Amino acid sequence: MSRTGVEPKPSWQEVPRPVRSEAERVLGARIVRGARVYGGYAPSATFRLLLADGRRAFFKGIWSESNKFMHRALEIEERVYRELGERISPWAPAFLGALRRDDWHALLLEDLGPADVPPWGSRKVRSAAHDFARLHQANLEAGAPDWISRDAWQQQADVWTRLGDLEGGLASAAALAGDARRQAEEWLGRSLPALSDAARRVREIQPPYTLLHEDARSDNVRVTGGRLRIFDWNWISLGPLEFDVAAFAEGIAADGGPEPEAFVAAYRDVQSVRRDALSWCVAGFAGYFTAVAWRPPIPQLPRVRDVQRRQMKVCLPWAARLLELPEPTWLAAVPD
Image (cartoon, rainbow, N blue to C red):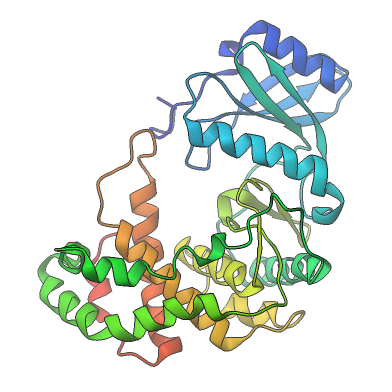
């Protein structure tokens, strides 16, 4: 178990010596120190490396005990850096190489430094929004390789319908509100048709499409010197920019930053956002978090449900504002 009491991560000395030696070969220098990095939700092996020649690098690795999702995610991420590196630069870290040794697979990347968000002040929100818009602009209508998903962003279209059809689904979500559960269940029942209809209309969003990161959030970004840098590109897809905007904006608010409208307003300084498309995407996110926030903890990922509750508490009011629904005041009773 890690020193922070969350996901287990090995120390640098626990990484097999042949793997550490291979990393030194790829980087072209001896590794003086490997500092274990915490953050994210998966128990991958992550280290900030100091090299004997003064350079720094970031090591992100998995091994035989890592789950199938982590193996698949790292395969995709390496492919993104190799094949799309020019298109996601300068927002992504530089790709320094990869290694496969014994049962290990690791990426070696530019070290972007320690986490600097949260807190999310207005200046950092504005900088992040402007640079995020520039990333989308640079890839707008540029297409993507065939292996990039074209419909991943549509997966939340039916989430409200499924939750409504699930026996006890709405009641389970409402139960998060404790003594206010009856108020919550009544609000969810009355609002379900509008939320469900809006989320389904995600499929109606037409081009132009751009490259979507799909997982821009505090633990996957740095905002240093007024510049946004983004890593963890394994969810990359092609779709409407409003999906990415909604995801990043709600995540910032869930991490204690400004309301999501502040991020959207700053983004619009650089790139336009279609209000209908944004509303539909937000309704989809609200449905997703409402459908999962009450479920049991995920093995090896003990913090995820807490984060999802906070995201639900941001997305539901935001969707209500966009769709002109009554304010879900019962959310004040839902613990973070």
